[in-house]
Each structure stands twice: as C-alpha cells, then as structure tokens.
Length: 318
Image (cartoon, rainbow, N blue to C red; front, side, top):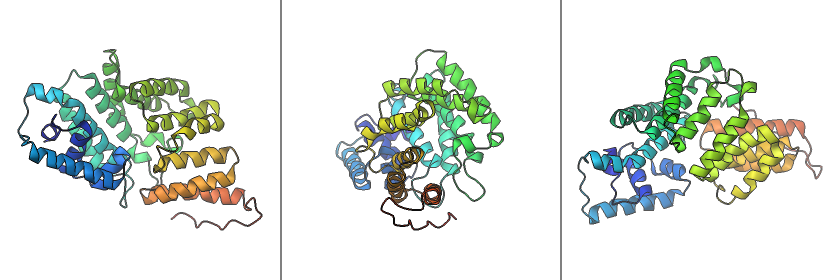
C-alpha cells in the first residue's frame, strides 16, 4: 500500500501526505506538523492529490520491482515521518506514541528486507532503532519530559542500541552517505557516551555540518544550534537561530530553544516572551509543562520585571 500511494504521477510531497493519511491513518493536523505547514494548506494538498488520482485514472496496483525501487525514497520518508509523530506527538494526551514508533520500525524492517543493500534504508533503520532505544528514559513517572543530558542511561534499550550501531557501521562502510545515515551516526555518538559529559560534541557538530549540506533545513540548523551552544556558548547559538525566525514562526522547538538560550544569557524578559510563545505552540501537555518549569525558574530568579512590577507566579506543573 505504501508503494501504491507513492505513485510517481503525484508530486513527492503529495505522495507522502497521501500515504500518511490513507495507510497510516494520521490526521491532517499531524501531517501538517510534519511538513511545517498549516492544517488548511495540508488539507488542500491532500485534496489535490486525491483529485489528481481520480482525474488521471492512476492505477492503484502493486508495483513491480523497478517501480518499487523508483518509489523507495518517498516510502522511506513516509516511514520516517510516521516515526517522528510517534516520537513527539503533535497533539492528544500522550507526548510519546509508542505504537506509532513500533509500527514505523516494523515497516522499516520490511523495507530493509526488500532492499538489503540500500545504505539509506540501513541508515533509516538504525536511526529509528537508536532513537526508540531511549523511550523508557524520555519521560519521568509523572509523564514529564526528561532532556537527553538528564536521562537515566541505564534505562536505554541495549539490544536496540547494539542492533542500530551495527547497521550504522555497515551503512557508512559503503562510503555513500545520505541524510538518514548521518542522522543515525549522530544518534550513535550519543549512544556511545556513557555519561553526558563524555559526549563528543565536536564530532556531532561535524556530522550536523554534513547533514546541512546534504539536506538543508531550518530544523536541522536549529538542532545544530543546540550543539553550538555546548561548544561555543549560548550567544553563538542564538545568533545562529535568529535568521530562522520567519520560517519557524509556528514551531514550538524554535521558541523553546530561543527561550533557553536567552535565559542562559540572563535576558529574562526576552526569555519569558519566547517561553510564552512556546507554550502557545505546545503540541502536548508534556511540552507545555516542560516550558512552565523554565518560567517557574525565571520567576524565582527574577521576581521583579524591568519596570518594577512583580511577575505573577506560574502554577507548578502537574
């Protein structure tokens, strides 16, 4: 079904959107978040795709081996986005939707069986395994977000990590790097660090630089800024993300990171503004609660505004 939906008569973005909607059953809102577009724009995109399929009499039949190979990239992208929706939900009560992550892993394993020599499918499989290995440590007992540096690494799934690391090594030995392989290599560096302070941030920065070249994206640059903050400090990272403001104006993680960097620089009022915007854009209760912790800290450390007015307290996160 995935290969059928990813028909070449449709533009690539429409192929993936239709596959996510029809095969995986994601909502229009969830798909829109994956593409960083509005819900209305995504609704139009899916409607146009369906109209094009009907008008062009596109045959929905099982493609042959050659056609499967031609459609491979779109199917891989669909599985990647499906996993991302499970890894960090775009709505609902659960921040992590384990069932979606596991379904994406099931599908990518099937894909790897069909294309066992494809480096990027090895990389994608490794990436999903390594990211999902951290699932037991990503939320605390109250369901609140635990950042990577604060996670109990003893809870990480060592079997998934071992399998993922083997696939990363196997893929990279072909010396044909692609975006999934590089992302998997970044995840592998984290997994090979017994403690947060042992993380090889310079190597991660080098890999992000490669990823930016292979697949330029404001989200990739935003992620690299986290690494730059570790290596060069919050001012350098803030300067790096400022040009992304227009393209990421509706993106929760942009304002969450901006607020954190401003807070590190002691710019409390600007940080509060960024955090307020992040809460407005939060996709789940866990994301909102995480930002409220930062706001609580700002209120505690800076009880008076610049104009001398006291800052109303934010209720503790539940």
